[in-house]
Image (tube, rainbow, N blue to C red; front, side, top):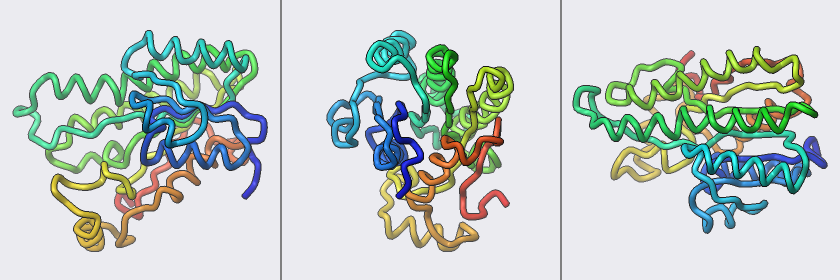
Length: 243
């Protein structure tokens, strides 16, 4: 284990479970002081780090979160915008408008709001931002998941364009687009982990689900000085599904 993030102040949204929790723990293991943000305080406390309750779809929450980080630490070095929700699962014409609004509010508006306030805190000293998108947004071939795919494709586009706006300020922005990972989000309704393994053995070129550590290692690489020449990139990590 290295200490690539020794002395760094890091924020992980959606840090209470899955990729977010694993990323928060990995950053802490490499020396960072980690703030974990999300809506469920109990889950955040299990993740370790400094828990701060915030809903990324609510600007007042995001502003208060970044203000608190600024007041306590004076800067923000790393931000991983991981908060997201899964949903849809139906043809577009059958989707209730509130479900569309729910997906957009967290998956897209949440990333916009997070970056808006993170950039404000990072501008004096620079920093790195990694947004978590999805390989479903990259290839968009999942009938019934059009709304979810649209939000994640938009995160990729937002990442690329915002990266160009702020790289000269010393703020480096990239994204990761994971495929099916070992999280509850990759399970179909009523499906067990064994069911998922059997499905993906046939449906994915690599024949298995991705581990949380495999996704996290890519996030940390993009957030670290090792990727210093990488700007506005969306790193797809999906076992060959979009190859």
